[in-house]
Length: 162
Image (cartoon, rainbow, N blue to C red; front, side, top):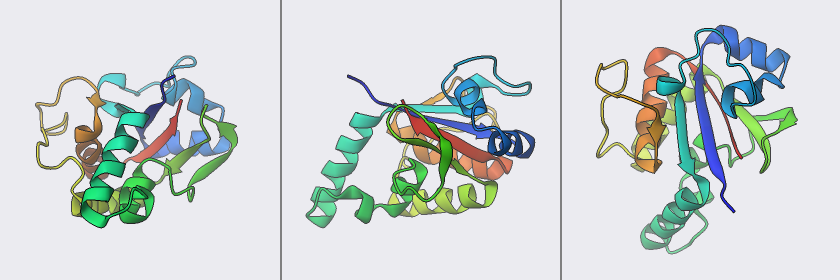
């Protein structure tokens, strides 16, 4: 059984629409229907096998901190993946728990925190804003660059695990 972490960059207008109608999350994040106008799946989406990401985080936490409890060791990774539960969307389950939303200010803070924790910035590749990132963001190596791009673009992030 697989668990897939799905994250999507959204603009302010779409963020407000999602807050007003959480059912839109299915169309945006989980491809349950027609995506809104202006949404670019090829540059606005991050995906990763959640179990793999969790295993990497546990292994790193054990090596660096002597524990597998990665959420406490890497609070910015927990925030970036919705594991901290602080930004859950009431009324929308994404398969393995609630979906979550980070507004543009939170995205900027999480991007800085991920950089400080060292998540994916060593092999960062430029994104669409830099002109060379093609296709969607995928794999834990792209988590930091995905959030950095969202922060530069002043966008929010909507996500969940399916």
